Amino acid sequence: MSTGPAIRVKGITKSFKDVHVLRGVDFDVETGSIFALLGSNGAGKTTLVKILSTLQKADAGTATVYGVDVATNPGDVRESISLTGQFAAVDDVLTGRENLVLVAKLRHLKNPGTIADNLLARFSLTDAANRRGSTYSGGMRRRLDIAMSLIGNPAIIFLDEPTTGLDPEGRLEVWQTIKQLAGQGTTVLLTTQYLDEAEQLADRIAILHKGTIIQNGTLTELRQLLPATTVEYVEKQPSLEDIFLTLTGDTGDTDDDHADNNLPARKEIR
Ligand SMILES: Nc1ncnc2c1ncn2[C@@H]1O[C@H](COP(=O)(O)OP(=O)(O)O)[C@@H](O)[C@H]1O
Ligand SMILES: [Mg+2]
Image (cartoon, rainbow, N blue to C red; front, top):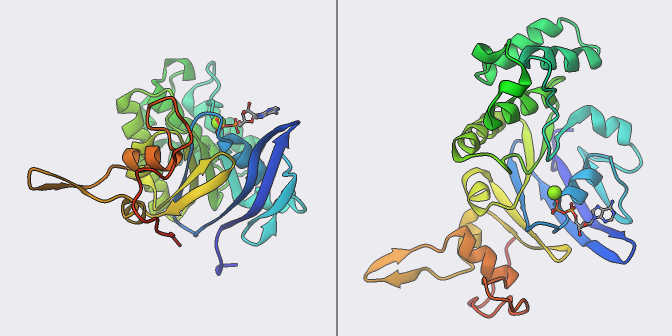
């Protein structure tokens, strides 16, 4: 079980009627790493996460979690994964602690109170444990949401746009939480439309654009796709934003079809 990638995605396609959302998606996620799936609104990130977390079926291709096929063995896959969706699953009327206890009970775990208290401490929510969800800030809700999805100790966690809608402070809190998770060995696949988020968190970044992964690499590798620009003797590295906009051809102008125009001789990233 310990060899091979945690997640392997090969040739996944998915259409909704005549909308071809995923046109053959391939990538691997190494155990214990943070993998960012970066794409604009509507790129198909949630669709892919739903397929990987067994909530939706692909039209073709395979996806495996620790070698187990998500389509043919969804029950086994669910034992090792957890999903934090785009919209927080926190109950507003319950307190933070009650939310956690509820999930632990639903999972038929022993000592739900102890589990809740440990998670509250781990996510710096002990002081807010007995306040209702409705009183939590955006960052606290997200942290509680992530804490809830860790009950049962999943090896892999899917975070679909974990910081969308958060203020800058909340984003930083959630980023720290995600880094801690990975530091403790959890494999994280997150989706984001924020370039700085991928830049901050991810060991590897895959850019999903028009149904396929158009680039997949470490930040250093992606940076090598664009030359550093020299400005008055100071070398400036291209930001991930420069790289993303060049690769997707979305330069902020209206024209959409000049993906490679500003790129130097294109390097294959493996
Ligand atoms: N159940 C569905 N039925 C029809 N179209 C869908 C459905 N789910 C997603 N889509 C379409 O698929 C595309 C990708 O959606 P989604 O995966 O949610 O993108 P993202 O999460 O990257 O914003 C969008 O054009 C969306 O409208
Ligand atoms: Mg989405």
